[in-house]
Amino acid sequence: LKSSAMQSAILGFGISIPSRKIKAEEIANAWKQDADAMINGLGVTEKTVPDAGEDTFTLAFEAGKQAIETAKIKSAQVSAVFVGSESHPYAVKPTSGMVAAALECDPYCHCADLEFACKAGTAAMQIVDSMIRAKQISHGLAIGADCAQAKPGDALEYTAAAGAAAFVMGSSEDKNALCRIDQTLSFTTDTPDFWRANGKPHPEHAGRFTGEPAYFHHVREATKGILQLSNLQTSDIDHVIFHMPNAKFPSRIAKELGFTKEQLEHGFIVPTIGNTYSACSPLGLAHVLQEAKRKDRILLVSYGSGAGSDAFLMTMLRDGMKLPVDTREATYIQYSEYQSLTTAH
Image (tube, rainbow, N blue to C red; front, top):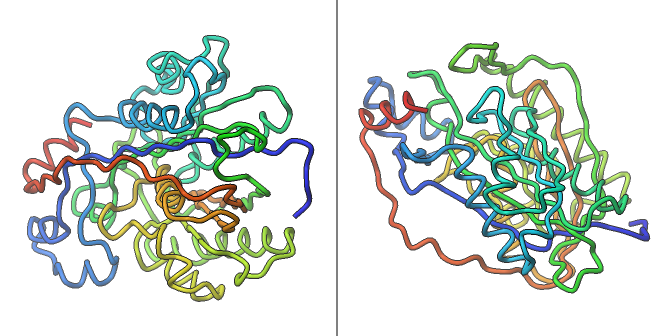
């Protein structure tokens, strides 16, 4: 990889996952659908559900707070906050500004809300990476957060989940630098596989068309592009994270591109969490950052419908950092409660 006078790195990271969950079997029973067929077809057994007091802002705040704590910096040192989501609480009122204020970041702070379906969180990482490389800021916060929507009875209802992942980024020369960002690129087309028109409560999707030429084409091209740019082979990668709309898609593209189950293992979190949209691949990365060892190479490839993929190559500068264990027990809810909570959101 080409060296740079200034490279960015992840200094700290945080996650926020609702404790409430619903099992796929419960959703299937509510609609008198074949539970085994849905579970086997999607590979997701349960998903997270935001409680009445949880939304994209609260999840982003909690993840951001933990990221700042693990970065071992003061919140006032953060002068850029970007939040990627497709479920911002307000149509006009920035989630990023709310997060920056709640975390007591530097008031001279670059803030923006980002949207690009499920890759808005990685888009936030790219922006902060660029600002650090340009020496415009010393520390920035990139967050992917969502409370995903799904039409009742639709296949998306089995996977659309809630969660957030946040990353404090700074210079790779920082004494607390955990994981260096070596390279990033994006692959983008106008492919209408998934959309939600203005004013509509739920997204629409093009069924099987969401696979090829949507998800697979973009993830494939972004992965091939960054490996070629960096002169690396799949065998040179220690950990790989792909966007996880379900368990089948990332498993299939990993096998096609020559990655092993071992390379996919630590970031493969979708079966028991679901698809957290903008937080999905960032949450996978957060899990990998807890397990990876010094000098390990990490490949992250997000996907956002509409459509595009962001790819990152990273190198661990020290051994992974374990986050505090969430001691809350998962609370499994019935479909009636789930329905009332999703209606409230």
